[in-house]
Amino acid sequence: MTALLTFLLLALGGYTLWLHRKASVLAEDLRYVHKSWRAAIEAQSRSVSELREEVAELRRAAPATDGGGGSWFTRYMTIQDALNVHPGVADVMKSLHIGGCTSCSVSSKETLEQAAAGHGVDLAVMLSKLNALMASAPAAEQVPASSPLVFATGPVPPR
Image (tube, rainbow, N blue to C red; front, side, top):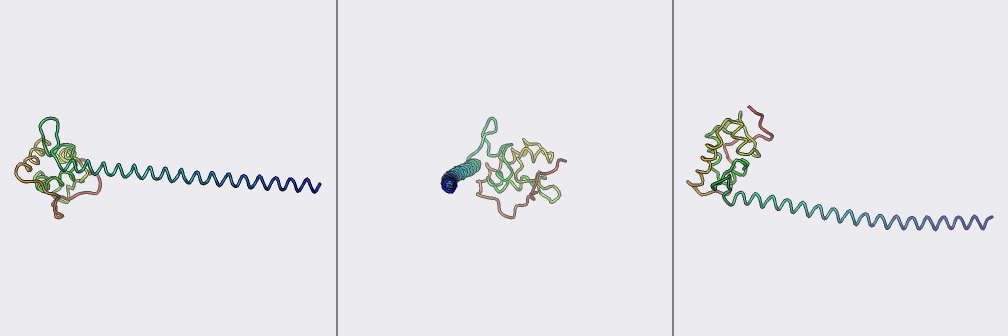
């Protein structure tokens, strides 16, 4: 009886050791897969960031088209993108009563179309004034820090 009990204990110990080794191998495989997926996700995130930067650079570098003739400013451009094209955008927006005071702030993430609609400005007039900037003076790199536009942190409520 003792021999049988000893044999069973040894068999159980061997089986436990085999299970432990198998679990260790599986845990190592899981760590490898986790590292591989994490590296792939980080690489894709970097690619997306690089593409976003490239799109932003293309928007600033060359005139865009808005369904016909070439123009620098389009209805789909954000206010921040427009400000990056030419510092005079701030003056044009202020002259149209868009973001020129603290009571009517705009978000820099709004499109020119949204800003015009939200402030009751004719979009065609806004775009023609903005595109006229490019005919009168060269584009600047960035807007000065003392921009007269007041930007909200969130979306502007409808009027």
